Amino acid sequence: MLHARLRKSFAPKPDSAGFTLDLEFSATAGVTVLFGPSGAGKTLVLDSIAGFVQPDEGRILLDDDILYDAAAGVHLPPQKRNCGYVFQNYALFPHMTLRENLAFAAERRPRLERHRRVNDMVEKFRLTEAAGRRPHEVSGGQRQRCCIARALIGEPKLLLLDEPATGLDAVLRAEFYEALRQVRSDFATPMLLVTHDLTECFELGEEMLILHAGRIVQKGTPRSVLDEPANLEVARLLGAFNLLEGEIRTLDPGRNTSRVQVGEFELEGPYFPGHLKGDRVTLCVRPEQLKVGARNGKPGPNQIPAALLRAVERPHGMRLEFSGGGIASTMRVTVSRTEYESQKDNREWVIHFPSDGLRVL
Amino acid sequence: MAIDWFPLWLSLRVAVISTVLAFAGGLWIAYLLANRQFRGKDVLDAAVTLPLVLPPTVLGYYLLVLLGRASPLGKLWETIFGAPLVFTWKAAVVAALLHALPLLVKSARAALESVDRSYERAARNLGASEWKLFWRVTLPLAWRSIFAATALAFARALGDFGVTLMVAGNIPGRTQTVAVAIYDAVESGNGAVARTLVLVVSVVALILLTLANRLSPSRV
Image (cartoon, rainbow over the protein chains, first blue to last red):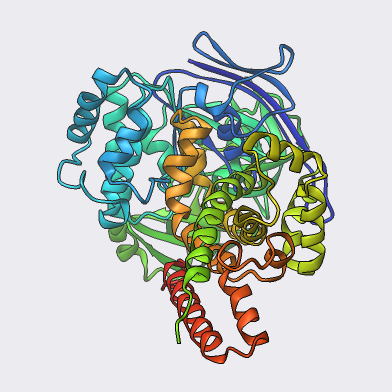
């Protein structure tokens, strides 16, 4: 188990704004995902844990080992930290065969064990055929498996992965997730994965930490984070919501209802604890929670008439973009292809908002 | 016409020994410059480069002062080996070393620094000591450039004239290197000897430089 408390500041320079990393978290068995936009400090966290960067303050504890403790003046060199690191470009030594890469890493094991461990890894990660070749002579999938195997061969107490799937095509990506799931079931090593891809969080993550501007802004399972983003910032970072400006008109805790003015229309939602009548809020609703239909005269409750701007084909269904109802932002709705085919001749549209699925931030 | 080939063999011997010494010392200095932060680093860098720009007479003068029979270093040498250093072929080795070292340090440093840092991070992360990292990762990845630099240093060591003349002198059969012998031959109007030696030296240098170019990792 990893526990880290880190603080590191970079003074502003003429060509860059200042930056402060300030966070505390734990990671246990399974995959913990560090999710955030570029420049949030994700890689800095990994590099601090691996020992490539020295934080200004804090403490890093891995099982019973103190890797870093500012107060006690402890800063172990990377060699002594026993953290596997899967680099973004894999960093397999280009002048060695895959087997030699593994053997290089196995040298921290007792001499008699090395050969067997290398063979075990070659077999486990299906590298038998490629083991005698150099990194540039093997496939991308073999390279990534070799990199994971090399990181694991020294039996690290933690595996750090720095955006390992970035820039991979869909096939390689799927292979990579498969390899990591295998690692999760075969090794007890906790994994800390850095990514800016929400799908990846769902593929692998049990626990998700959302990082923004050097701070953790929310923790939880990917599902819980997506269902209940803690604040507007998180919702924006996840990029998976319609965010509509509105104002709370009524709040009724007894009947668990509320009414929110959005554009020219009022929508009914559940009671929003912690908000007051007249609050300016942002309505947060996912595109797949919305439904569309043909407009028949006056719009019903929780319906907003809108004009279809665009229909975009997606791998799974269609994304429809609407404007209207006096609402400033574009509203996105996800529907299945068949649903769209049956409705595409609508002359006028309405968007149905679910009354129980509304959230305000 | 009988040509005395001794100067050529002497020059080769001097160049080989000084290149070996320059390789060992130069690689170490290059490693320090490429990897370590210490006070006076830029001064060391400049000092190593100095022989490339100073006139040979200045260098020769320094060496005479530093290694002459009256100097502490010269006396130390004399007590250990029983004979003075200056005006022997060993002094020519020092002179050649002075020219080979800057070339080697400059190129080796650039070569070491051009190795992608992520390989070094990976090696450290995998528990490799700095020693293992250098010999097993950095050097193998940079060896082509370093070998090319060594060939260049060897060619330069082969051709030194001014400093050699000042500290080793021009004693035929003892300290007369090929560059000095050519000067001697021209001065005494011995055109045939001069022509032959010039040709041999040029061909050797051409071969070495071609080799160095082939080794430079600039191939596409």
